[in-house]
Length: 526
Ligand SMILES: *[C@@H]1O[C@H](CO)[C@@H](O)[C@H](O)[C@H]1NC(C)=O
Ligand SMILES: *[C@@H]1O[C@H](CO)[C@@H](O)[C@H](O)[C@H]1NC(C)=O
Ligand SMILES: *[C@@H]1O[C@H](CO)[C@@H](O)[C@H](O)[C@H]1NC(C)=O
Ligand SMILES: *[C@@H]1O[C@H](CO)[C@@H](O)[C@H](O)[C@H]1NC(C)=O
Ligand SMILES: *[C@@H]1O[C@H](CO)[C@@H](O)[C@H](O)[C@H]1NC(C)=O
Ligand SMILES: *[C@@H]1O[C@H](CO)[C@@H](O)[C@H](O)[C@H]1NC(C)=O
Ligand SMILES: *[C@@H]1O[C@H](CO)[C@@H](O)[C@H](O)[C@H]1NC(C)=O
Ligand SMILES: *[C@@H]1O[C@H](CO)[C@@H](O)[C@H](O)[C@H]1NC(C)=O
Image 1 (cartoon, protein in one colour):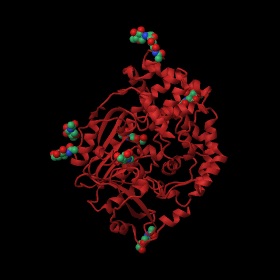
Image 2: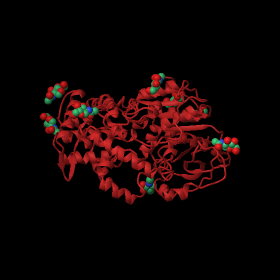
Image 3: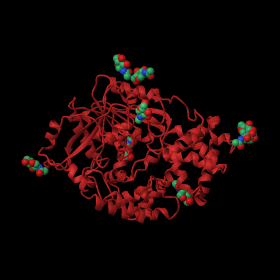
């Protein structure tokens, strides 16, 4: 952590209060690594904030790295954005979308984001001293490290997997603690909420927060709203996590819509059979239910009979990873159907041509940073595999499709040695200065509508906007109705009528899958 020590532990003689008052932000050009991601206008700045909010007299600061896209017209103020994870590197994500996002959120506000503690160059959380050490150790013990190094690990891939993950979790928790002991408890959502308020004060506008967050960014949003209800001018949270579950449990509610999202895929398929390869390939000619049965039979057949093809393994994990990636956004449903159809027909070359790009599209984040933030935020622990097993079994029972996704990370979190120095333990039943706009999809496999309803009920003056769609967050569809609601909320403070349901512009399977697009995407991978 020496690089970190020299860069971030800059000692300056200011207190918390002074840091805020003096910290006017000087916007300037961004580094090349960011400007190369966009043709839009982006500006960058750094802002010193207290390193440890539990030490009000300490002069240690953390330099937050900020990025903004200025308003297209005269600015009505800044909106702070968070893209979730936890662990997403916000500046990189936003720079890459700097021309796409403003018209969806607001053209009349400056849009601002910063890399949260633990991510990017901001207190980067590591379980290895160097990339070389990481390469060496993960090559020596790939089985241990796959919980962090693979994008997804499926704990029910075999009946011995969960025990192996538990043992690996012991080793991972120990090593991450040793390597990042000096920073591990300075990460976490409550501190990031305070960082947000530091940015708000340093922006020197009206001292009020305007915020937009998706996915984990909703847990952060709910936390900052609960901690600073009087400072909320506008807040949109979209694809909502139940924050009480996030902080206090192994998170069960998250699975509430996973299976219904997968079922919606089959229903969409039979409703527009001309655009669904699972139907037109004559694999079957029946109901969504029949199609789903066939696909599950295929998945469980492959689980015991993986196929070697072209130097790779087509196995249970590979199939489930493709399903996970596709359920983020219904635009990939025709490809998902084409993949299943090819595999059912024994066309292995056709299958991997479709599946590789599906997987390459996976929007997941680095597990090291995800664990660092989510495990440190979470209070739930287990002292043995035996103690964790009821959690695992409950997840398996809650969802066939994703019930065995999160337990691998749970084995790490259950044994995690850090606890965030500050955890928000108060209520999420609050009335904010201005009502929050809460957005939820009917079938979101990552963040179910019940969680959006829960958070909206807690923030008593908030309004819940439902999108009659499938996928993770309202970005899973194009919906003029949601975009209009967001723009008028930020620009004019107009809230949609309670119980408004927006429809997507196009139904599921509106366009057919074409192999040309898949081949193009495959090439991008290499
Ligand atoms: C930027 O513009 C150039 C020229 O129009 C184009 O080739 C390139 O793909 C654009 N890059 C991004 C990130 O939009
Ligand atoms: C911080 O400093 C003030 C003023 O010197 C002192 O009164 C207070 O006890 C200190 N607080 C802590 C937590 O050390
Ligand atoms: C589907 O069935 C029709 C009628 O039997 C046949 O003409 C067509 O070739 C079949 N398509 C495939 C992909 O098997
Ligand atoms: C497929 O289903 C349609 C509608 O139920 C039916 O008319 C047709 O005969 C079926 N075809 C086959 C091959 O079973
Ligand atoms: C886990 O594996 C068991 C045994 O094969 C199977 O019965 C069960 O359906 C699986 N559950 C999940 C969620 O994968
Ligand atoms: C919201 O969720 C929490 C924790 O899961 C639960 O205790 C609470 O009763 C729920 N609130 C509502 C209004 O459903
Ligand atoms: C906000 O209100 C103004 C004045 O009524 C109107 O011209 C503008 O279109 C509204 N903005 C949006 C995004 O609806
Ligand atoms: C946009 O949203 C506002 C506020 O909810 C509503 O009054 C208006 O009718 C909507 N406009 C369109 C075109 O949907």
